[in-house]
Structure formats: C-alpha cells, structure tokens
Image (tube, rainbow, N blue to C red; front, side, top):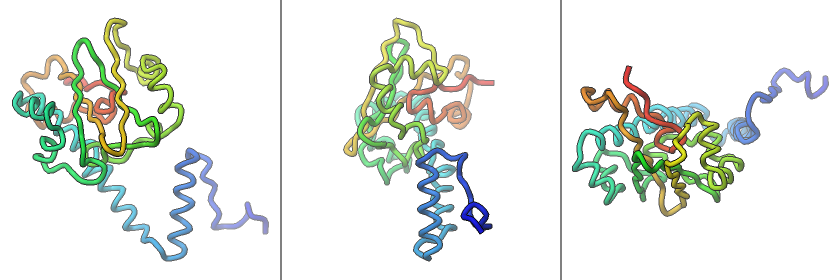
Length: 205
C-alpha cells in the first residue's frame, strides 16, 4: 500500500498552509495523547462564539449609545472595555480609534499577528498573512478596495500597527437610520472587519 492509499491519511489541500500545519500538529499531539481534541474545540468555540467579535460589537454599540462611555473609551479603552467584562488574553492594553467622516482607521500588525482576542475572537487568516501585513501599510486604500470598502479620495486613512504592548479596536461610524435601534440591535450591525477597519458597520434592515 502506498502512502496515498493509507485509509487514515487525509489531504488538507483545501486549507491554507498555516491552517494545514496547525491541523497536522494538532493531529500529532492528539495521537500522542498530549492534547484533548474536545478541549481544543471548546477553546476555539469560546473565542469564536463567546469571546469573539460579539464582545467588541457590544463595546461599539455602547459607545454609539452613551457619549460618556465613548469619551471614556477614547481616554482609557482598557478600563472602559474591562467595565463590560471583556478583558484577558491579548486584550490587556487597548486603544480605541474612532472613524469619522474625514478619517478611516485600519489596524494591522506588521511584525506578527498581535490581535485583541478578548473583543475580536480569533484572528482571521488574512490578518496574519504577509501580503496583508505589508500592503496595509504601503497601499491601505487599495487593500480596503479589495475588501469592498470604497472611500472618497478626501477621506484620510490612518493605519495603526498593533504590538505586544498595545492593541487597537476601531469604532466604526454609526450607520444612518439606526437612531431608533436598541443597543442590542446596534451590536448586530457591527462586524469583526468593521472593528479592524477592513469593513463598515452594516445598515439597518
């Protein structure tokens, strides 16, 4: 029997190289009894669905509804975010940057993939990729176009470089027509990409 014929061998060709390596490592460690796959799944589920972008969306919605909270977020994002119960891994030191009609903020980590897990969950694969990390600095307007964000030429784009010491959360502009929505409903308009800067808040239905 050849290697390709082995019944337990799976080709992960549909995964990006990093994901394929992670899955291969997880399989090896699991086969050796060093990790529990169920525990790994629970951790991933927690960051994707519980400590994920939903937390950041609640921060944004609160800032949209409460001017005092928005001011606190500008002055001390770490404390303001922690007041909602969102703190911990890679979210100890935060800064909130607010989009305005004149300025659009974009976050990148040029050295590695520093990312505020406590409010955004697991980082997307593209955020960790070398092309994004380099082009977001060199050609941010072009990168935003590729994400479907077309800004007027007179809108300034400010790029923020996350580090191990400081991570950023973009506060997108509140959509027009959302004045009558509840805070919970507003949170539903906030996407992960909008809080990185590669997207905009959704429009109310």
